[in-house]
Image (cartoon, rainbow, N blue to C red; front, side, top):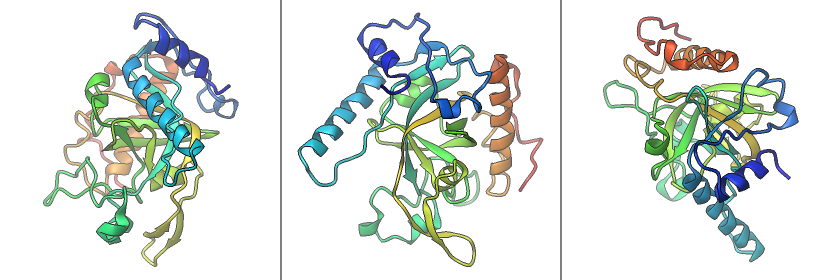
Length: 271
């Protein structure tokens, strides 16, 4: 049985919000998350039920041997940890939104890829974040942001196996699907999804192959405040790494994140 599955089934059935469930991580990730207390409150049983319902439909589609079946979320856990961090596990699908690759596709070729992201730079023309050059995650729409107090621009940590990556919430996807990340995020987690690059280093062909399960997401609500002002393509990666690493260190030592500054505008280091 998958890590966390027993917890999820019990939580969906009867666990009230005041209980203190915990999550057992995959063995391959134990070293990376050493020091993190994965005990907290069930963040939203209704959201978990939504993701589970989608998975049942996806399984039924495959059992019926239908074409174009969607992949399962493989979400077993959705917790609010003791310092307010939102934690969940899922697959990690490929998100190319905002990249030159997505912009180069015709409308008939585009599919789920979009030239734009929900997060925009506060610059002329409101340019989108580039999935090829920025590690970001997409969160579900349909009440997920408001229920969990998560906003576009909040920073995150994503763990798979023995790899850890810093990221930002930059996109909002379908309400019943969870677990999606940019091209760069996949690459930072050791999952190659770009088949070819041009002379400028931009991805020109991708592999639409997800990491199927056991990806852990830690989102830090409220960190968008002070993060977006003055944001540029030149400083976004440095801002993500600085703020997300601060929050990750605080989580590992169980200090409250509210004591850490989120104003990045006066302490940028571009790269």
